[in-house]
Amino acid sequence: MNWLISANSSMFDHASVFEHFGFIDWKQGNGKFQINDFVYIYSTVPTKKIQYKCRVEKINLTSSDIQRNEEYWIDKTEYQKALTGKYMKLSLVEQIYSSKMSLENLIANGLKAAPQGSKKLDGNLLEYIERNFSDSNQNDVFPDTVNEDSISYEGIKKSVTVNKYERSSIARNKCIERNGTLCKICELDFSKIYGDLGKGFIHVHHITPIHKIGKEYKIDYVKDLIPVCPNCHAMLHRKIDGKEVSVEELKEIIKINKSTVA
Image (cartoon, rainbow, N blue to C red; front, side, top):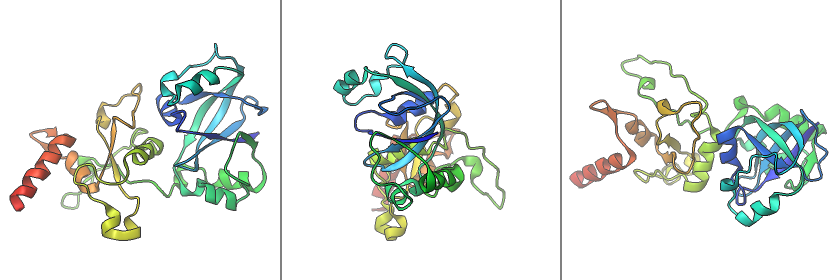
């Protein structure tokens, strides 16, 4: 069985829970979920997209059986209300950020209205979601992988392995939702230069270097990620005396050189 449910990030930071643990203990509500069912999660305003595909691992859990996640609740009063009823354990299968999963496109393919509660998926809508819910179908990916080894010099180009932390489109776009698409270093706004072509475009820089992130690292899109333009991103990954510059150091370099030019 396949299901569609909704998540409100203004109440509960589900994106960080998935990023940190790979699963969520979720209220079952009135849905008759079974183990091994698939659940698609629709993120409400401002995202308004399906972003997650999960598998039901356990059902009928009580509040004493679950991971509490109190620190991820924005509204603590809602957290207390949530500690009633039955829960199911949702294991993350895949996550994407694609306009093909937008509310507009879902409605065009059979969804009646913005999801509320739980809904069984079948027919044309399920076929559309399954056909388009894949990394290979993402069309909103920001090309934010920058590495000194990936830059071409005199026709030579080295390959770079991109790990799951660099590919985390959800964390990247949560960073953009929070900070916008203005470069936080040089303040470049692509839409002011390129119009609609540049609207929404930006790179995202990992303040915590990728090579220092291990399997147990819990990425924090508030503290660890920052939107930057491609030029500033490349400069952040260049080295002076064997050391990459920090965000604040690069800001200071730009400030000094702007005053020199002026």
